[in-house]
Image (cartoon, rainbow, N blue to C red; front, side, top):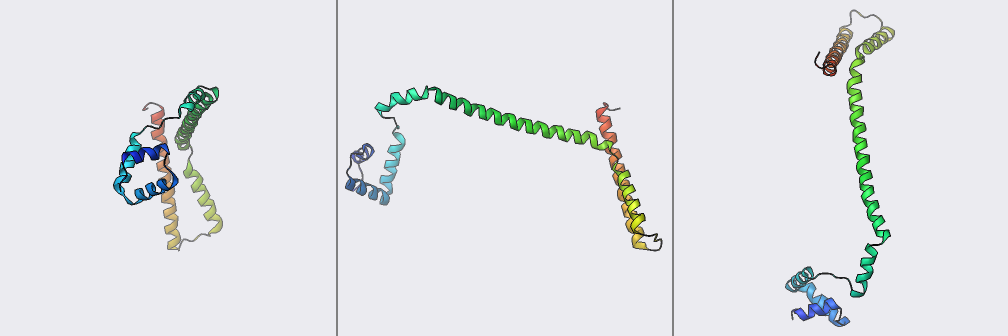
Length: 165
């Protein structure tokens, strides 16, 4: 026993009794072709509102309550877009501020003064220690490299700011 079109119509209209509904659903559970037939019919049928509710639904959509909810939804999306735009603009402004203010600070003087005063306080003069001389030389090379890099960035940014002069 397969499901025919009349059974599908009766199921859609809810005119089947309980026993028929149970048999109908159990058959759909075991028969894929009938299930596919039902799914196809359901996809082609249009869900319409009951005739006694159609006028109420149309009146409700025109009410101020629904119109206000729609306007609030549109406004909240615009507010979110504004917030994201402001966050992006603040990030770009902070990046530009850091880009143009950092080259004017000379970090090499701060580091060389810090290391020289620290080495004078904690480590006594060791001219014979090779490891100490090597590490001091590496430290000095790093400070010199940082200084030259800061100078290069400063020159580059000043050329950009002054139009290539």
